[in-house]
Image (cartoon, rainbow, N blue to C red; front, side, top):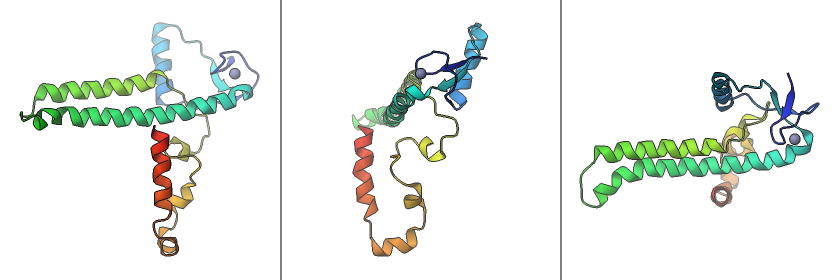
Length: 164
Ligand SMILES: [Zn+2]
């Protein structure tokens, strides 16, 4: 089994393996059925690790954007006739649901898989990697007295910037 870099598609001696997640295994299943499965081990070579990280980051940001857009479409479109003075329309609900699914499917088109052994924190798309998970989830009771609501306004604009 050849080891192939996911980014440059060249055979490499070593690299960081990609995590075999749902999307990748679905793609593999599809290729198997089409008979075009190469059966290579997908890695990211050291040379392209930095480029990969940038891609993955922008994908995570895009995914949040797409998901937000899909939710707005799924909820907003059925409400639109109501705002215009009409009643609920079943066709509109079906249409907006299909549209939302299509938007999510679009985001898969430029899918960038995660690396094997990546910490779970990185999987939570949208959350800045720089933020320490301990600071947000740790012990809020003691530190809130000393710094009331200080971390929250600092975190909020960061998240907004990342979204855009
Ligand atoms: Zn490479």
